Length: 424
Image 1 (spheres, rainbow, N blue to C red):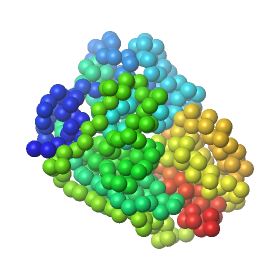
Image 2 (tube, rainbow, N blue to C red):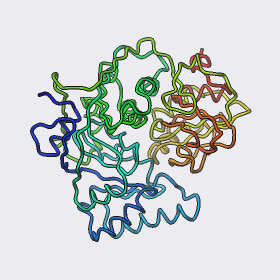
Image 3 (cartoon, rainbow, N blue to C red):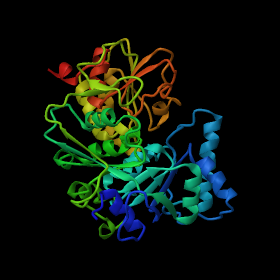
């Protein structure tokens, strides 16, 4: 019986020749990551277990990203707990404020993720790493603490959904627009505890920064993990950054006779920029169909669309223009390295001259904590991944999810706008 891409990755790390959906297996873990907001409880459970040492201090990255810079005393204490634990355990990959970034962009950037790996992250969007052809999923604090002790964990093998894209994308249409289609068609629960396997000629011709979007937003469909088939583009991305030597990268391919519980096929040749209306990532229409309500805030950033390429796209739309005088715009690069690139490439100057505020790398506004939170009855246009009620601030705020190009065009017009309208 043939195996899907996810099944092959898991079978390898379980040291089994063959597995199938529903099997309970024990897998070796390559990376077990936690953040400032998740690590305090994990550390508490770790110590309650009576553990003294983590299984491998080189496989447990600890990242300051959610409540940074610390917004209050409690968040400062959270950071301090993780900081002290990192020192006690001799954690090799510890990322402090000012030398850190949003974990789901930082770890690939730093070369900690490789094709064929099994990755646990103490955050739901840890699925992002699957863009590199690995199995990556979010887990809770108890599972993470056990992983820190044992270096392995049990999993139930998920069923797989095969998702294929064909055709050439029109200009100013992106992976975010493609993934919003998947969110529309699967809904919040259509991918529950399933592996979403992304492929097809469109993705094969996409750069890595776009591929991460598919894996990132897998969780918006309830997915256990999302995985993009690794290829030469993956290999080129890893060269010069990967921590593992090239001979340890594992480029698995799904078998032709693999069994999938569902298949989705899309031709993107005529795809339009898409928008997820409040209050669900799957409440999706084309930009031409969305209501033209006045916008209070445009936010560009997050683990979904805070990469340097995203900022280049937004800056390309904004260059020489001003944001609408009745809204505010917040730009947050995903990592400090991206922040530096933004400065050296002149993107920061474009955003500043347009009237935007530029913040340090943080998850803050994406989950309604700080640095861009929405007020009562405000309307926001975000390049993030979720727009649930109260996700980005007030429960009465209305948040729309878009691509960086649509976000920048919206900032200019003051209402949700197709980028082609401002670039003609």
